[in-house]
Image: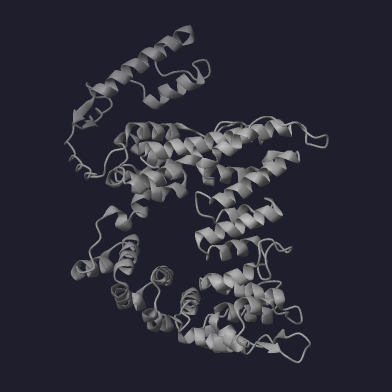
Length: 546
């Protein structure tokens, strides 16, 4: 039963109690009776006791002076979760992971104990893959963890299920769960429920409309596109941009008419996104126009002793180029002509270069010398095109051999671009390339490349990383120089590698030129790594995995 405070008697009436205001009592208690005279007749040495007596009376009065209020309606029960419960050992492991907190100590020394919170994402991924439901008593802690770490939210909400959404409606701190869930936790209509779809699209909140469009796009791309067209002209520019971005999933030639029409949108960002999507369709009219423009800028000069690519960058950015997504104004410090050239080459279908450059393969095209210092600009644009068009053949050509002295192949100009090129390759090929890179160049530049490899790392990649760490250890370097790679190894190395690492957990003899105390630090780092790997193996076994 709810209660409400009784109305205060009118001052001066017979029923009005002579009690000091609560705020005055609190202020006197906080400041002290010698600094703030408490309300009432008592003073001097009797004031503290009188203050406490008055506060006790006021507390009783405040509690007793409440009148029953109308009871609020009980909330509807949470939806049932039909998934199986966790095995007891896995439930205990989850409680341990959630109870762990990052250490508060300073310095770079992490100790030999594993970081349990860093294992929580992997545990959640395994639990979701096996289809288990979250224990109800862990839901508040799970939601608190997801509130503080946005990277945990998708896995936590999948694992927590419908009960998490029920709780989120009762606690404002967990409202992120409603925003992250499709439709805010509401059931979305099916593709055949046209009336419900139309109503939600016209009357729903923005998050619900995005969720509806995304879901329809996955189930019926044509229905999603037709729905978007019904209100496109009246949508806000920022909403049109978000809706247009949803067409990336399942992008196909049937989307071209809608995207071509969007090239005339009044929003520059919408036009740029439409052009980017069209350039990812090699058979689109925009891709053809870009191929013609880029092809007129790059040619093979056969009059030289060695066939050489010559580049004639555009001299202007005309209205047609701007309509097709070319940004006319170059960034500060960038030449306009090179800026325009890069955008044209990036948007041109990669398949056209073989026809325009004498039937050469991507490897042969990339190997051609480029005149007048245009090489880095041209190859960087091809890198971006290979990533946008998800072309593994061009990605291989631009990456080159992992053991090349340049450490990045003939076209990749940065580690970030190499990582993006690697992401277009299959998991096994990606791991082999990075393993070759680590074996040749060590770990100092490998962190970004390791981050795009599938987990757990393939055996050749795991061996290459462990061998490189061992070499760094024998060289007497401090282990925190490799703390990023060591942290990745704890999460990504195959647990089966733990046995190979046992020999590295002992404190080694330090060479004369080694950093003082480095051996002890390395021993701790390898102890933490082996402990973490065995813990990951136990987690997998507790969840019913191999």
